[in-house]
Structures are given as structure tokens and as C-alpha cells.
Length: 318
Image 1 (cartoon, helix red, strand yellow):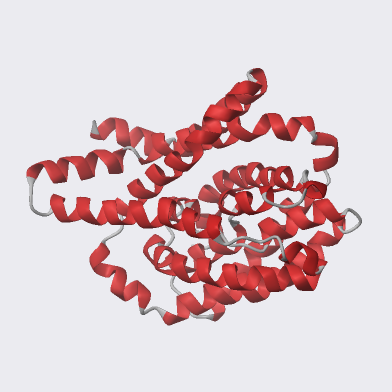
Image 2 (cartoon, rainbow, N blue to C red; image 1 turned 90 degrees about the horizontal axis):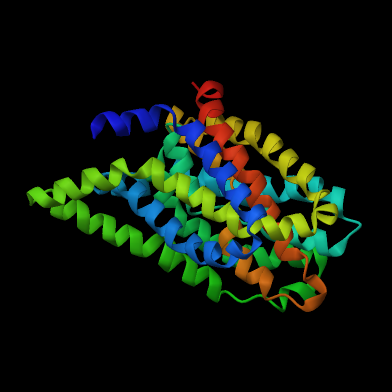
């Protein structure tokens, strides 16, 4: 079993690419699969975060919470640098209000879920990112309406509902975190708890492959149907990732952070909260009916970027 796990970890990037390809092929060949696949996205994310949290020593969480330099750097990158970059790169779609609104929703909200996973795979400080997740969630709930008001006006802000934020945080972060803590507690006291903990930790790669496949399968058909309109957003998302990578790296070095923390700052600055804010965008008026697919397009682009970053960031930040 250990040999199988080691082999999966060695070839994890190839397996993630395969997951993306399988999801795309299935979603395009059988468009009706988008419904069942969409229903699996949230449970798959919760399982992925549970497996991730099992690898985080909770005894060190207090230390991570006291790392003011890391928390301050992550907040500054996401809520000072990111809005400036978003304002600039979004000019590409500024002529189309619907595309602009979708781009702003997704790029102004930092990821709180699978960023922890990808950062950990690249040797980042996943315990510190986990400690930062509640702060990032709270800050984006407060600041997103303000940024939208500044960039597009008050009419979009009036439609916002914070309930999807809260629900996503409870289901995807809080519950897996509690379950992982309970598993670690049991593992320290019983033989079966240790076996379960080892088994779930070994399932990290296949769970990630499953998550990538169901996310892509659930969304790819909708994106294809509006591809001509959505293509203009792709360079926005790619340019955002390209610009935010050196900004995050420089911010981490300027703050005097260690290598794992600097890698995590880069991942946090690049990765967006697309799956969490999608319900907010779906609740927008009918005039913005294309905006959810604008958000979904960012997810598809970002997943490819993250698979590349798992190998690239450790080489850029040694």
C-alpha cells in the first residue's frame, strides 16, 4: 500500500492532468452529466480538505495563528495588491458589463479551500493558510461589496447575499476541520484511529483527481455553449496569474517569510474563490445570466494553472 501511495505522489501532476482530461471528455461527450457532477463538487471538496487537514499538526495551529507577518502579508496581497491588479487586467473586458461583473466577482475573492491543498503539494505552509482562512473569508465578505461599488456601481451590490459564503465555510472548511481534529485525537489513542488516519492521508492524490474531474465535468458543457463570448476572459485570468506570481513572491521576501510561507503567499494571491462565490453570481438579475459561466471559466483556467504551479513554484522559490 505504501508503494502505491508513493508512486501516486511521484506522478501526481500527470494524474491531475488526467483528471482534468477525463472530466472534460465526460462533460463534453455526455452534457447531462453536469447535474450529477455538480452535486458531487461540494462533497468532493469537503473530502479533499478533510484529507488535507489530517496532514496538518493541530498542535502547531497556535503557532500559525500567532504568525502576524504571514497573516498580514496574505491580507495585504489579497486586499491591497489584488484589487489594483484586477482593476488593470479587467480593462480587457471593461466594454462588456456582464463579463466585467463576472470577472470582478471571482478575481476579488481569495480562495479558502483547495488553495491549502495545492500549496501543500508545492511545499507551502498549509497550516498557516488554514489559520488565515477565516480572516480571508471575513475580509472578502466585508470588502467585496465595497470593491464592486467602486468598480461597477451600487446596483450589483444590492443583490449580494452572504448566506452562500457562510454555508460554504461551514461545509467545506469547518466540518472537515472538526472531523480531522477528531481523527487525529483518535489516532493518538487507538490503533484503528491511526490506521484510518494513514488511509485517508494516502487517499489525497486520488481524491484530488476525483475533485478535478467532477468540477470540470460539471461545468465544461456550459462553457462550450458560450465559448465565443467567454474566450475574452481567458487572457484576463492568465494575465492575473502571471502578474500576481511575482507580486506574491516579492511580498513574501519583503516580509522576511520562510520559503514555505512565501510559496503559500503566492498561491493565495493567485488562487480565487470561484466555487464559493458562484452561488452569489447565480443570484444576480437575469441581465447577468452569462456571469456564472464567466466565473466557471476562471475555475477551469485556474485548475490548469494550479497543476503547473505544483511543479513551478518550488523551482521559483527555492
